[in-house]
Image (cartoon, rainbow over all chains, first blue to last red; front, side, top):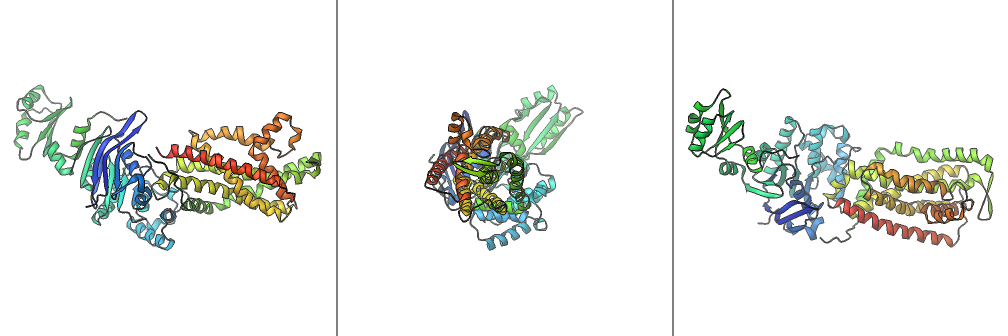
Length: 304
Length: 261
């Protein structure tokens, strides 16, 4: 089967900074692939290389089986790209934003008009189609950018942090639309630092840091492999508790004021054993999430 | 990485985008070229004309209004293309992220910049056409040669737009455009034989002025507006062709470095 994206030893260097360090991954047709990582991990650099804004320093990058060095224009005709920053034309109306963009793909005016109407309905923007883009709310702007990325009926949709800065209602609306697109068979590549977003939308993810891929896999399988099934969080842990955990050789993470104990499936007895050691602040058991995997792998230091 | 010069007819789509936006705001954009000649002709024409009367220019006595009318058109050809491809292009590139959005479509960097420069020249043509109409009402333009001012506006607009785009490729922020405006545009506006003949300047200043593009554009505009052309105009056109080729290449090289990182 032909891959949507095939990156091999992909490398990007800006001056002294190695932004992407020999990264290899593939995206298959019809799958939603997520690139996760803290700020500065190299996510956006990878995206920019795919649509030609940033020529790779090294490695091989093929999209739809075509090398980006020789076929960029043909590749870009089949991509839909939603950049992180708002790049709508503020002086134009919602409808004009789509129709002007369609011209860049040489889409005939009549076809563009029909598609614009269909996409505006799909994104629940048709009732604002004569409004200027600058007057839209943040959520509407983001939906319009996604609609615009679909105007050429792409074979691969690339989303760079599609819901950053949106309120919960807008995020859920965007997710529902993306799920519909995924169900229709569109391949999606998305970057995010929201783990709930990745867990909900992605078939497969990679977690990156400092330009390298740390792990790759399906979200649920990654959680199982890296953490287990549940997590017991103990606030203000006592010395006795720490000794007990160490004595039993349980996998855990000590954060000072908090201890996280990783619990395998069908190991609920651990919670009962620990409870007596918990102080007033108490302890609780919850399901392990992709966020736990992310923090375990990329550390808890601030990225600024 | 190979960097072939990648230019197709798609650059018209960039031009078309700017036209669409212009048509949304045309009632605002239309006013300056309509009113500006009135202001100039009033201030310099009626104000200064009474003091100056007739000017000696290349051996002929020319009424002062007749002398400055083509220069006003020349200044506007320069300003419209230069300011469009500096401030306006910079806003599209830096603040509106228009170029970044275009780069994710089949458009190439070369097409975006070419479309922008041709749009800058188009702004010169629009302004020239409006001003030409207004100035003709004062009986200051000789026809049919005056009509050639319109294609001239496009051709020289390309050169001034390329110079503007070169600066857009190098400035860090929008305030820095003050430098080329203050050191390049303003001196040309004043000393290129626009409001007084150059032979009143000291010799060194004349030589300096001869190197400046507006000096040559003012000459071209006077010839066409007065219907007094000769073969030396071809030399002036050649000057602009070379200027255009140099700054178009420089603009392209700087924008490549700026956009493709």
